[in-house]
Each structure stands twice: as structure tokens, then as C-alpha cells.
Length: 186
Image (cartoon, rainbow, N blue to C red; front, side):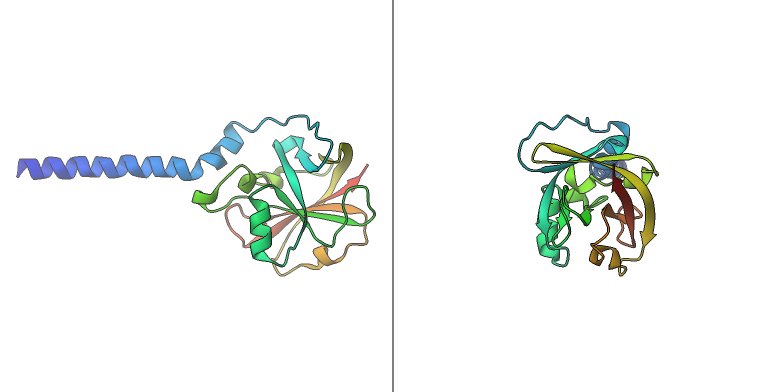
């Protein structure tokens, strides 16, 4: 009987330890984004498009011309960086630039790019966003932020206004609403 109690005791401790290890494995990308934010490096690439948001230590390649209506297409793009919505402008062009990314994702799929917009909600009016396209830097200043319903896609369809819109899901880890950050060139 004593051996059986010992086995149950060790089995219980093993489950506790495995649960803790699993918890830290699942949430480590999120914890690291706050505790040890990635270093924002100077981008020296002469080709390609990249976004840098210094305040939240976010930096990633921008995958251009991604179909925002095709989940398969944008999910594949978001594994490599943040997505630029097909049909919207690019830096240096007139009109709305629309860029979107995850705030987080499924634990077994979390990568640096799945959490690139994790801290997007921390941006405030006046904060700076940089987009580098083919070696040229474009600067934007946050002018507004809103939470909207997922069905409110009018911001993606109104592309005449000269602005940058960043989008991610909110609250973190859900797809209940969309957080939109609006910025203007300066």
C-alpha cells in the first residue's frame, strides 16, 4: 500500500511539473516580448519593405500585396512578417497603406512574427512608426486608435485618404475585436 501511495505522490508531482513546463512553453513568447523585448536593429537592406515601431520594439518584414479576404494566403504571409493588404497603397504612393498582423497565435505556432503586434495597443497619439521600402525611410506619427468589430471592414475599403493603418486582433489572444492604429506621414 505504501508503494502505491508513493507512486501516486510522485505521479502528482510529475503532473504539476509538466503543467508548469507546458505553461511556460506556451506563454514564453508573450512573456519575453514584455520582459526581454527584441532589439530594434538598423535596417540596411536596399530591397524589400520593413516596418519598425520603436516604442514597442516591433520590427518585421512587410509582405506586400497579400489578399486580406483569403485566410490561407494571409496566414502563410503572417508566418514571414506582417501583411500589406492587396489593393492598398505602398509607402511613397498616395492613399491608404493597410498593414495587419497577429497579436498572438496558437501556442504551437508562436514565432516572433506571430507576436509582432502584441503590444500595438500601447501606442499613443504622437508615437512614431517607420517603414523602410527599398532603402528609403518613411516616417509616420500615430494620429488615432480605435477598437472595431471584425465586420467593420470599411477602413480597408476606403483607400483614398493618405494614411497608414495598422490592424491586429484584440484582446490579445482572441479575435473578438480589431485594434486599428491610424498614422499620418510627416
